Length: 308
Image (cartoon, rainbow, N blue to C red):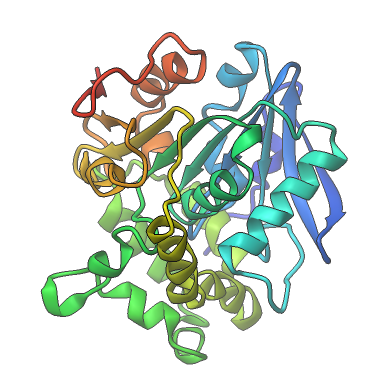
């Protein structure tokens, strides 16, 4: 049985769900607070509700928080195409323009959402005030090594990138798979509760919803070529950037991989956390995130690590 509770019923006071037609698709997003824009981009297999524990604390800091369901996922429209990370950066830019929030943006991306955030910062560097990338490898800047199973890389990339096959395998078995997935990647057993897994299952159930999820993976090689070309032609990110990893997840590896393209990157490690850093220990996550977002911690040395 999958719990039928609607997670939107437990949104913090002052937060609402809205929709916007942008870039040829419809995006659903959560928003609340008042002030400078702070955008939160979730990963796979999640939705904007992955940020539910940190929405209210971040809004209280004086930000307008915007957390979209990425293209094709959650309550956003099931788009047939457009899953390249640059296209999704356009999705976000047009959404923020429609909200009049496209300047002085603080941007936080987790997993696939971090790949979109990197593309956004690369394409619109003049509007990104600060960038946080959490628990990912960036296409073209380390991801290809992370997905190389012959060298000990992660098995799931190749499977998820294959046309049609993962939909055939997982359709009808979504709840069992996601139960295993969250338990496998979380640093603490039970950190992602049964109600949360049930909500993910509902969002990703059925061949079409699964397809939209896997389409985010099927563009990764092309995404990597775009990022690599940018880097080889001299591209660098110069805004303040924080690379976050869970202690039993990516750790400081993301910062190490990014440093050639992001010379001033800070590394942050969330203690006792696995892959789902904003959910497993929201308090520790915020202790590292908030000083960076508010400018009380600034890049000073290449080897600097921000940690509790």
